[in-house]
Every structure is written in structure tokens, then in C-alpha cells.
Figure 1 (cartoon, rainbow, N blue to C red):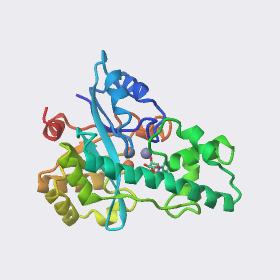
Figure 2 (tube, helix red, strand yellow):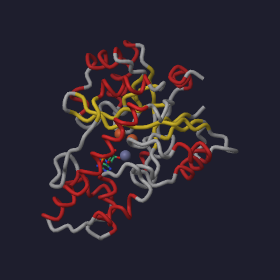
Figure 3 (cartoon, rainbow, N blue to C red):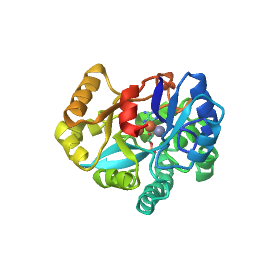
Figure 4 (tube, rainbow, N blue to C red):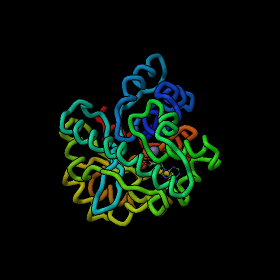
Length: 275
Ligand code: AMP
Ligand code: ZN
Ligand code: FE
Ligand code: FE
């Protein structure tokens, strides 16, 4: 069984449509693929329909932008009711925060002679519910300012970048509780990448587990062997599930993030989603 529990379509900042993503997952020999777009569930219907007649199970999911002790933490949610009112409300706040940030990023870029309009970004974000920095980066590529999405993050859009602007993120503990109340499972995505490694100590995971956290994504491209082992140890101590996944973004990220780049053990998958 090849199980990949974290991928993005063009409903957020991936480059495949949900249909293309599911077809690519089947082609890559995956048995299970979770669609986890940033802060949005708008790709679920299309992805589930695309699995019809293919040898791949689609798990509907999400990757929510949250904050914990001042650091950004990404929280994966699976199999929850996408219409659960308090969760819908919180996701609206996050998506509004994304929309409000966009003109401020563009103003910063303009101060440095990079002229990008909201229409330029909309051309790139297309059918995305969650507009983000990657779409600004794509607009910079389209207008010839840079050669690739990654270059925009170096010096411009990363958290120390000249055009960086923060945005609203949901409180982590409360969001775990929301996902659980909506009947879903909650897993912290790539806990020891960029910044969140400072706050997600084993004591912090104890607190998250008490709030209902189900699992930890240990196997992720951002984690070296030492991190993977450390996160596994923490998960074992707290009886949390361990997952592995690619964080595939189509051509939006390097080939290191290819479908199936990291996999989830079938027994852990059973424990997480109870099939
Ligand atoms: P945002 O959603 O606007 O906060 O942008 C964050 C997203 O940008 C992440 O989820 C990644 O998909 C992407 N990202 C972050 N850093 C980089 C980078 N250095 N190069 C390419 N994409 C990145
Ligand atoms: Zn992304
Ligand atoms: Fe993430
Ligand atoms: Fe992701």
C-alpha cells in the first residue's frame, strides 16, 4: 500500500487541477492520496469524482494556517464535515486574511520597482480559493522579474523578505478542537520546518495531544533523519499516529516533492482514519 497524505491542487498553490492530481496519483502507483489544499475544501468534490474508476482512494483533507506561540504551524485535517459552522467561520477568517494581505505585498514590491497588479496575481491564482505568496511569485515570473517561483521567496516573500507581510492564522489548539468537533482527524504538518521547530517541543506536543491531536507528520522533505527520528519518538511517547507525505505542489515545488516522495505506513493510516 502506497499512501500519501498531503498534496496541493490549484485550489490553493499547487499547479494540477484536482482531477489531474488524482490521475497523477494513480499513475504514480499510489493507493491512497489525500488532497490537503491550504485553508480550503473547494477541491474535494472534483477530486472524489476523479477517483471514480481509478485504483486510488481519495481522502478529503485540508492544511490550515495556524499559529502557536507566535510561530506559524500548518495543521492537516482529514475527513471532517466541511460545513461545520464554527470551522467554516474560522476558515473564512483565514481566507479573508490572505485577501487583505495581497494588496499590501504588492505595495511593498512596488516600492522596490516591481510592478505587479492584483489582476496579474488573479491570472495566476485562477480557481484558487486560497491566494498566497506562491501566486505573487508566479506573477513575478510571468512579468519577467524572476525565473522561477522559488526566487521570489529569496529576499522578497520569505519571512525576512523585503515584501513580506503577515496575515491572520487560526489559533492552533482551538483549530485542533474545531477539526475534532467536525468529526475529523488532526495531524501537525512538517512540525520541524522553518520556525515552528522552535515552539513544537515535546512538551508542546503533550499540550496538543491533550487538545485532541491525532498525529505527527514525521516523514516530510523538510525533515532530516534526526528530525524524523525525534518526531517518531515523541509520537510514540504520546500514542500519536506517525504520517509521511510528499507535500506535492505539481510544478510549483521542486521534484523532491514528487507524489509518493514520502509515504504513510498502512497500519498508521488505519489508526488515523479507522478503515
Ligand atoms: P502563503 O500561503 O501565502 O503563506 O505562502 C506559503 C506557501 O508558499 C507555503 O505553503 C509553500 O507552499 C510556499 N513556499 C514557502 N516557502 C517557499 C519557498 N522558499 N519556495 C517556494 N515556495 C515556498
Ligand atoms: Zn503550499
Ligand atoms: Fe505546509
Ligand atoms: Fe503543504
